[in-house]
Length: 88
Image (tube, rainbow, N blue to C red; front, side):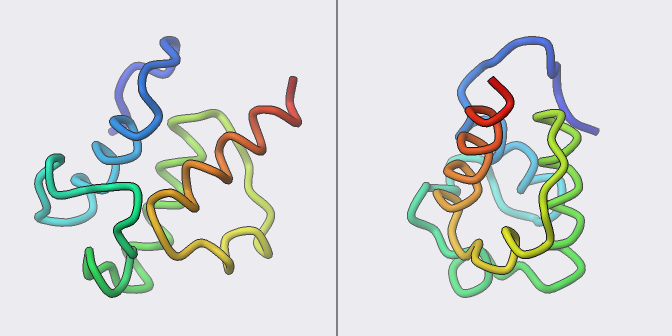
């Protein structure tokens, strides 16, 4: 499951940890520019699970259309930041 959500922490480290829960990758292999499908090898089920884990980790609820555009780890980070900023 997701780590401590009460501490803001480093968003990249938190997302990287979530990716390691859905893949055999190591945290150090996950960089912002890494493409989820092409570089990290995620398939549709893993992408759906990752989206759910990110929502839970950051206490967010994404709109389906927002997830379609997500292709890289940085896209996830940007989406999280956008939702957090909108939340105030």
